[in-house]
Image (cartoon, rainbow, N blue to C red; front, side):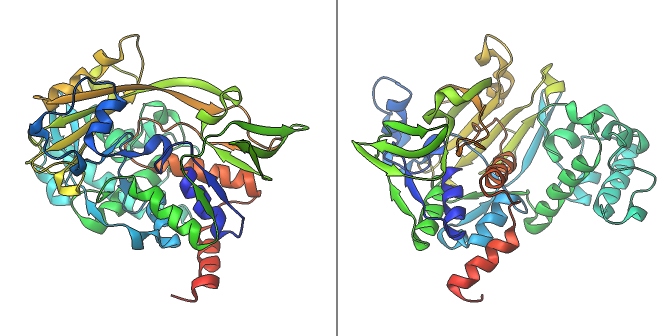
Length: 431
């Protein structure tokens, strides 16, 4: 996230120095290679067995996320042309959990009609609902059909189309990608726009709305680092941060190895400033190495599975992201499945059992529980801008919301893609 902001700030003509205490790009959301390093990081005794192949063939994301084909991060990548440094593959399918089994989330009308997720009449009503969503245009009240986007709740919209609980579950959690059911009692326009984003992303590539970069997510920060460098930004890895220097309540510099780098504004993740953040929860993530595709996914090389909270008596969803050797992140014939959710009890490993059962047999597990930290200080006075910890979702939309939020707090204006495009043309010339 900080990498993306440093790239964007460089494009915006700011003088950027980017320091990272780690020897690799990407901080919290790095990809770890070789496999030996992952074993060390999770303090697993011994070295990886020979069956895991060559250690350097592995590139394991600590925080797995897919990119929505039509989502905000892809727009940021396209506008900044970071896409020239990356290759993407479309994820082969999105699945949803119902009554202990997984079903493919229908991605076309034909699939919706053939899907065993719904009965025949339900399918017709669901199709009507999807047509309504596709035609919905916030600027054109004729498309509202008596619904007030700012007042009518989503619960009432589902009622209007007479959709049953199972369909509501997968629409809210697998299409609109909400983590809880709080959205049901909020005005419906955001949910409708989220379902629209899903459908439009799907329309671009067909199999699923998600993309994933070859060689892992670690490629993203490196792409943005190159972007920053083109615009005169400076990058320093392996740079310990000794102190953030604040004078009269305002940041004036950062001390590292006895020297002070002066600055007017500072962006960092919560791990650098413990006293200006608060803990709002925890996320558990389990990285699983498999020698087989996940059952009932049609032998997909990559997929996402969403377990809606209702299905497992929880308040928040459980996610599974699966990628494999097809993305150059694992040895030949190996798969990496990562399970994540928001912690709700004193026994987080029990909470994710339904997901782990879908993955059996599991060759090796790496478990991490991390605190969800959010800034207490918005940076208005101090000019220190702290990002939020990555949440349990399996796509980048919430991360991008945070990036836009920090951008606004720093510059006082909304993040504007068009403006970035103009600035880029000033340097590169027209497309």
